[in-house]
Image (tube, rainbow, N blue to C red; front, side):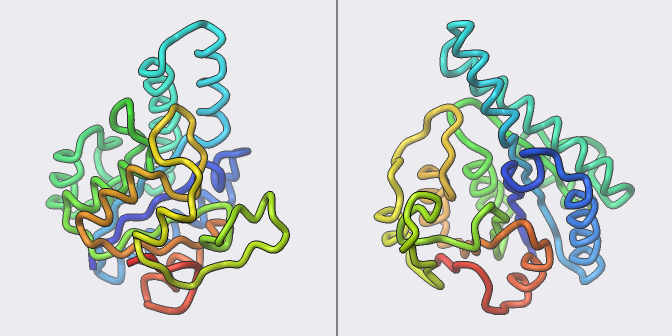
Length: 224
């Protein structure tokens, strides 16, 4: 099975949770030992948004804000790659072609952001499409996808399953902006819908959820 794992910066990097990073490295090793191909895309979290705010104060344009946020995500990706050890690729993948090449070499691919104008969600969707992944699993700071923002609405209900069309209606933001913080980025939704990709959104605070999602157990929210 070919799996793309999207690790939210809100989970492992806001603040940096070294125990969780180590656990994810173990989970990825387990997936690899089971014969899976794995790509891990790491987000920049609160630190990336902090640097975006600094860039705004310096009157830098949105492209520059994005470039700085990408650097932060790649720093976290490098941290994860080093934690992973020998099964990881030579260096953080900077392009989709890098990802394909490292997979051909039998390595776990680790990457952060790719280019201005897209979030790490969209990167995960693009790489999933590019390497023809079977599944994209996103570990986030919520138990799954809700019918409205559970941080603002006490009566929000978790959805076990929905289509990409239904997903679009759940979200408030429908286009990219630097530092967008939404459970799944609108651009990623378009890419996944185009490629008919399966997406499972789970709580990233329990790394075992990733293994459960890969095994097909009922966990988080399935979007297909």
